[in-house]
Length: 474
Ligand SMILES: Nc1nc2c(ncn2[C@@H]2O[C@H](COP(=O)(O)OP(=O)(O)OP(=O)(O)O)[C@@H](O)[C@H]2O)c(=O)[nH]1
Ligand SMILES: [Mg+2]
Image (tube, rainbow, N blue to C red; front, top):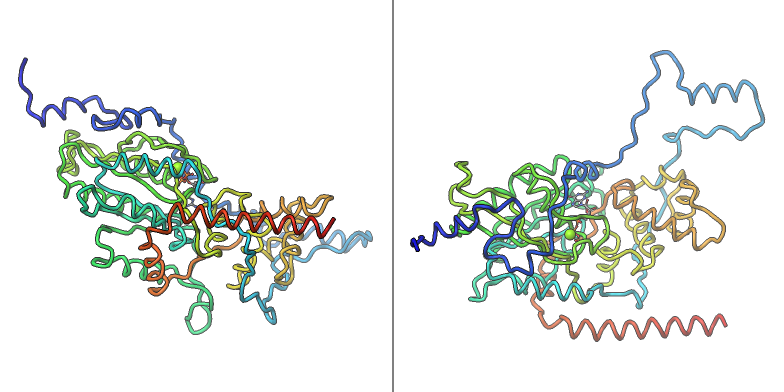
C-alpha cells in the first residue's frame, strides 16, 4: 500500500467536505444533530429590520390630505358625530410634574432560575466536545451586557485540559436595539441613560488584558449599519486560526444564554463569507437550538486558492450550541431584565409583571413612545392603565379584565423586543458594576447544588404564599 504523509491524509479525508459537512475530527454523535436548512438568510436579515410605519405619500402641494378633507367635511356638515381626533403629533406628551417610580418592588417569590435539564445536558456535551475547539465565541445581549454574562459557561469552557486559557471572542448582539445616545441640555446624557458608546468603551477597557487574559476581541453586532462588525469578527477569527496554524483548521464553538442570537450569528457569518443559506434554525423564543450542531464551515480552507486563506489549514468551522442559563440569578432584578429581553421563556414570570417592569424602565428615562402609540396624554406608573391603553389601541381589550390585560402585556413585551416601544440599555455598565460581576463569576460554588437548594426554598415560599392567598379569599 502506498504511504501517505499525515498532511496529505488530512487533506484527502476532507476533500469531500461540503460547507456543513463534519470534519474527520467530529464525533459521530454530533454529526446527526444538524442538517443544512434551505437558504433564508435574506429573510432573516429582513426580519431584523424594524417595522417602521410606511410613510404615507404627501398630497400634491396645495391640496389637503384625505384625513384633512374628512375633518373639513365633518366640520361643514356638523353631523353630530364624535369630535375628530386631534392629529397624533398634537397630543400633549409631557413628563413635566411626573415622578417616575424610583424603585421596582420585586416579589420574594419571583423565580430566580431557568436552568433546565437540556441546559445541563448541553453543558456536559459541550465539555466533552472541547478537545478540538480552538476558539469560543461567547454571545451576550448588548441590552443586558452584564446580566447576560454566564460565568458558568466561562468557567466550564475557558481553559484546555492542560489548563491553558482557550481563546475567546465576546460578541455583543442586538446592538441595533440599544437606544441612541439621549442627550439633554448642555450636551449631557439624560439622567438614568448611558450613551452606548460609553458602555462600549467601559466594556472594552474592562476586558483588556491582563484583567481578562484570553479575550482576543470584543465585537458589537446588530442589524443594519451595526452589521458591518461582522467583517471585524471574521478578521479576529482568522487571526486566531493563523495563530493556531493547525492542519485541520479551526473549530469554533458559539455559546451563550438562551435566545442571545448564537444561531443567527452562525448563519450570518456563513452568509457573509461564503454566501450560503441558513444552516441553523433560529427563533424569537429561547430554546430553539436543543442539541450541539455539526461543525458548519464559515471560512474556506487554503486549498481554495484564495490568498486570504493562507494559514487557515482546512478552514474554519463553527459548532452551534443550545443556550445555557445560569443556575441561579442572585440579583432578582436581573431575572426581570432577562425575562424582558427574551432569555427566559415567556410565562415563567407573569407577563403583567414583566410589562410593569418595562413601564418602570421606560418612565425612568422619560421614553414617551408608549404614550404616542397608545394615545395617552400623560405618563403613568400604573401598569393596568398602561395595559388598558395598549389593549384599546390594539383591540385586545375584551370582557374578562385580567385575561385581556395578560394578552396586552404579552403584546407590549413583543413590541418592545421588536424595538417599537423605545429602546433601553437595562444594565448599568460601570467599572464597579463589572468588577462586582467578575467577583460573582469567581464563585464556582454558586452552581448546581446551591441553585437547586435556593430554588427549592423559593418554590416552597411561593406555594405557601399561594395557599395563604387561597385561605384568605376562601
Ligand atoms: N434585532 C436583532 N435581532 C437579533 C439579533 N441577533 C439575533 N436576533 C434575533 O434574536 C432571536 C434569537 O436568535 P437565535 O439566533 O435563534 O438565538 P439563539 O441564541 O440561537 O437561541 P437558542 O437557540 O434558543 O439558545 C431571533 O428572533 C433573531 O432574529 C440582532 O443582532 N439584532
Ligand atoms: Mg440557537
